[in-house]
Length: 381
Image (cartoon, rainbow, N blue to C red; front, side, top):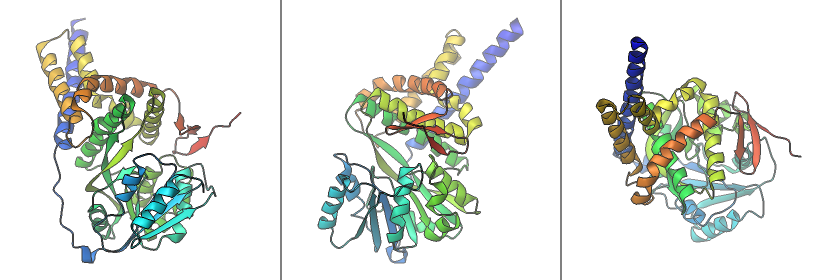
């Protein structure tokens, strides 16, 4: 009986120590600012920015405008919508009038090429793309003036297939949006940074993907991922299949987080989690170790409040707070302070829930996610 107790104690300390180490490393990486390299603009190639749009929010104008004020010699922006009544078109027209010197193209096309509507939009947009170097970016992304220059430079290496970057969530007003942003800033992006430091490169993020058109053609174009839910990840995977490298740029962009309710927040995060689980089932199964606060709290209870367990729990909690209170992430520090433990406990609950089914919700539609990432629309009755 004593040996079983000793084994349980050892296991409790081991798990808590790993969770603490992970949380501390996350805090250090998140709060370490990478210096920006200077780029010689005259040597950078012309690029086409592809911006698929669907709907508009009050912030959409400012987010799209940030792509029109780039410190870059020659670039084209292609906006695409599937519905001629899409309110985003009014914003694009405003930008065309405000920046007449920019090469701004608009594609309005209803044709659907698969279950992934964003990729269908991109397929429709590609015929008007004028340049070899492509930058794909979601509509809810805001960037700084050096964004294009810092992305295009590494892509000039022919051994590079994709350049992507980290992003931080910027919440709209409301507790649900703030919790959604805290998921991105406090768990998802820190895990990416740790993976990158360890040499892992099996990722690509829809916030920004840069690639050459000839590489896209070699993998079969956007049609190759027209039915894929994790379309960004698959782009990276297919280019790595050609023997090309994925580069994680030092660029960090902002993405708008707008969750109107608890139901929206849960649906969004379960879609992310179940997608990650499908792509990396073993890694995701053991990712509970990244849930620092719940793991060390459970260990503290299991070890009956022993002093070493208390030190581990306190260190982990402080590291978690340091991540959430990063000044580069928007949101009131006071609100994030009291929401941090709630957010961390929600991580645990949603991690457990994510194993229940392969069903995901994307907008108003529901899909069954197959093992290879294909999204199969559920029949409507």
